[in-house]
Length: 186
Image (cartoon, rainbow, N blue to C red; front, side, top):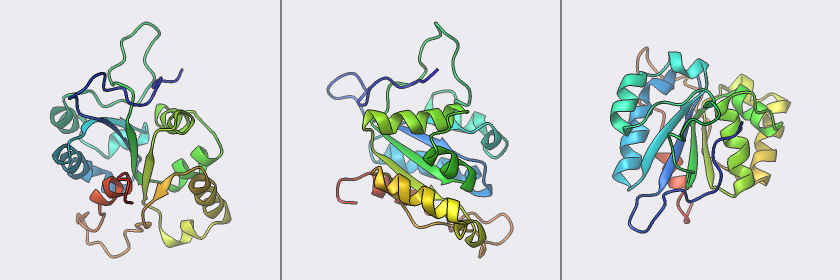
């Protein structure tokens, strides 16, 4: 049922490292193209894994055109080829309250969660940009989940609650920060 099999799935010297971008259902998700472009400019090849609910927040056709790969949201059937190589890193952005809590609990009921759970076990670097409002971030389960994931080596950026944004303005979500978190200096 799981997808990746080992980190460093790019296959050979001279090939670009492969970044899985896991996208959750949040209003800022429509701006995921900003992250894709920034990652490509930094030398990554990108594949997008969306939660089923996130598909309603992104333009899959635009994402597929930018990455040259299908947006993944469901497990492939046995015998189907893998549409992505194994990841060299995973960026979870935007990360919602629900996904962070389920991931920390080891729940793997979507491809996105399965990817996150397995990436940890494979030793793949993972960075997270939460999109969680202050009220949800104050919940004890969320705080415990973030603490648990940090203890697993997951790198977190500052949470974004979206309170200051104007209608239609998603400019305050600092997509590039998740890439900064994946560098050795972060």
